[in-house]
Length: 301
Length: 325
Image (tube, one colour):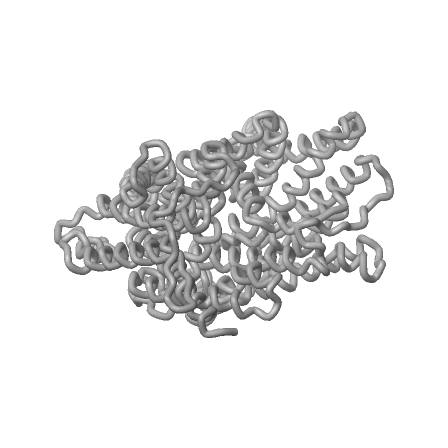
């Protein structure tokens, strides 16, 4: 096992981790504002990837611009979904909101995944690279697409952090997540922020889908595993903690890549990688349900 | 005549049994699969609808029950019913264990935990192919040594009937009340003297046992098991069936399973559209009729006998205690 091999694996793990984090941050944001776990998040990621693909191939736009178009489209689409399906969550007459949010997002995932088979076909599609070619550093070889995905992913996460901490809208979002009533008292329209948070989460997922598309390919069921990964990250990082999600995302990306690289039986390594992440998830849920970096007031009882 | 609906149901069941041999082989297969889903939907309704424990691992337990029974029969040559019983016992034990581990989890956390469990089970079955034959599918000995489907129909019918009677007994007893109390408010239930922990573990074990029973029958009926039995796609179908029918009652859950399985077969021509279609129906059901589409029908059906009973009672001038229920 050479050092070069290890470094390549670490670099790949970091890129995948950033993409995971991008998806997981959306799950966390939606959870902290709407108080639901979005089981359809992976499918929004899938739609984002396909949307960018069609913008590139049909409209001939450059891939990076297509990514932003896809983000905007999914932002709008998610707000429509939220208005249509999730408004009963804010109604006091609705009993057992947890259950409602669960079944509706689970059903939405089922619907989107199956409609995608019809709309896009069951066969994998691959959009053109952002930047073709590879980088060599010594014995290291990394494709430009991976570097690009990692870089843009980090930039988007930094932009989100800036938005959350330094702008008035971000502060308002934080206020709503801490206390809906107090936020209403100081004049924040909490309902509007429900839509907004769901849209932002979907836009980040769309960006992740567009970034990952040239590395892996697009398929209607591509969202299933990232969705589960997002849960692993969100549980690991603590529900509602954006920073925790980012750290946990990179941690999981590394752990999984190294697990695959060093698992003794290579024919089974890939299959068990996903199981490994899930095992982490179950252990954390049992022993530390608030996550490694959870915020106390957001713990769900 | 109080309980008229019971007699109607018994008559319908008797008719189904008597005229079962008139069904074509294809529709008999559909009916058998519908009854398989009926056991799963009703036991999931016991877990998710009555006790409020929204587990996504129910199909995984069916898968475990099926594989356990199939492998035990294959390895030790034990009779198939004994193998199925062993599968049920294993699922009860594992279900109880899962119930115990997630005692402190609620709502979405429980769903995510059981989702993780289900995926690990599926991945393990798919990967350990020297034991389970992986995605190629495990060949399981068939329950009856005959090409006819009729014996399977009767067996499925008997299993569904027994499952419903047992679960119906549970939900009508004090236990059913305790389960619903836990669903509504765990702390209040605990304060009123319900042993919340014990019942959460118990209901997990019972529901998982029924899932294992259904899975065992499924394997010995089809003769082949694949890891996708415990996958998320079938779990989603089970959720669709149960929620569309009505998650809070056993008969409506079974009705949902029958209706959805039947419609899936009728719509088989439009292969691609039927799944998204049921996705939309599920979303609309949640949005506008959260109790399920069959619940009003069932309540009307149950009231059929009661209304007449009330009318005859009133005509005899007997004071009514609670006429307008």
